Length: 468
Image 1 (tube, rainbow, N blue to C red):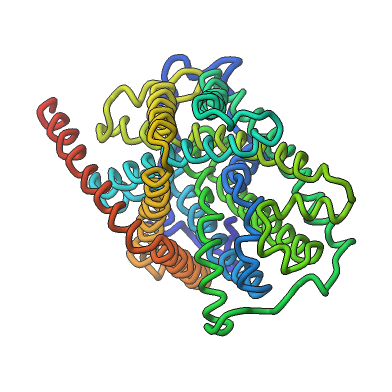
Image 2 (cartoon, rainbow, N blue to C red):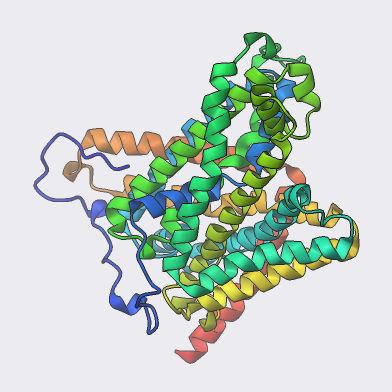
């Protein structure tokens, strides 16, 4: 969220001069009408929160429990980094509020090649992650309706979970926003029930040791942080869809910070409540920590069913938002000639070709996952996305640092300049931490994906030069 400095300024500094606002040309024929609606602050905030909070939160308390309650400290450290990154996106969107987010910022600062790498890496991240979300959602659906007994039944269920959000996207931005808002409310209700209600059933004896292992506090924080790092992917959601947000210079930054802070609060309170309601020895072995917490709070054995329903709603809403984002970045790149021109086609405010290509690729990967009968290759691809997601983050943060360093210091509020520089430095450190947390294998495989993109870039720029 942008906060102006106190000292009056006679004129904005050159690096603060905002890019022209999106023109009607950015919304081609078919982009207006009753099926199209710009996202206000509530929907933009829901887009950020809904994309950050997927299904992983329902397993996080058990994942970090072996490291002790020191993992709550890791949550706090990561939240600072994630909010710093959110603030950077807000400042960049204020300067250039066009659809595309990190792609737009990287291309404006460093040229076509950097912009293409941001778009390519982000696009890979979205459609591979969508396939992973759908496969994971089937596990929760199986609790409600047995579908996982047969491989192809589970495969069809995963495909249906992917295509339903895609159909909402094809219907137009009005329906995308409605689904996102409703699903975010529905997912937050049970999470807040545990996060807030669990504080009334809190038993300090359940917490267990502050930290375990031989690495001390620092080692425990680092180890638990490695598991939590990727829980904040999605902070860029409002910036990527800035062209669809009403008054983006104002609302993108606010939605990004509010959504990130809200997700962090749900993460932190939810984990704390589970720690305090489920005995530590049991939590370490738990495969459904939120279910155990609900059963401990209210008794009975309905916790698994309730949490499975909440997780299914959460992941479906997350797919709805990520499907839109998966088409927005290629759309922006296609308008600049860096992606095939078909990706620039829009209908009812949505890049329908991008949505279609993304859901088809994700569906093929899903079918391959069930056909192979082994999740090994699939797991590797999912791990790779944890690296590819950081590429646009680093480029966007570098773009902000470049703007700050290249600016004329005599025309800016020095206090604001220092504040923005500190925030950008923290965001850069957070992004580098994400790369380190991905692991050597993921970085190695991810670089191969990026090199494949270099070949695509060569073809696209060659075609553009021939046409010129």
